[in-house]
Image (cartoon, rainbow, N blue to C red; front, side):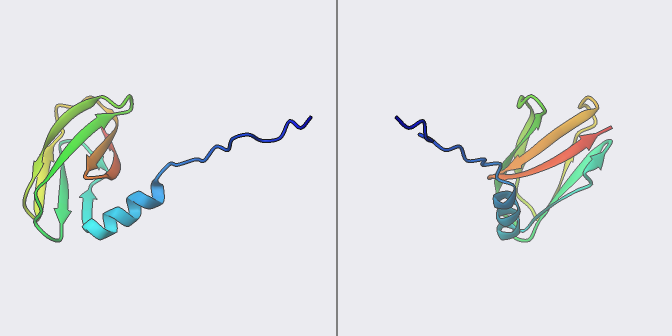
Length: 96
């Protein structure tokens, strides 16, 4: 009788996929330490939806970007760690 491995577990964190996707979409998000506004810059003005989620995965803000440079007002958010999600791209930022 063998007690060998029946299944395998694969860690799929997606970090490399996000970097590659960000490069292909050519999206820049800054600053990552923000108090009032953050900016999204994209090479081509593509219409895309975005979500901002807190550390628990709860959506706290959402909207649409449609120009090469957009600003997002995050002044009303509580201080903490958040994630900006755009078409599969994810950027972590800190609101202080």
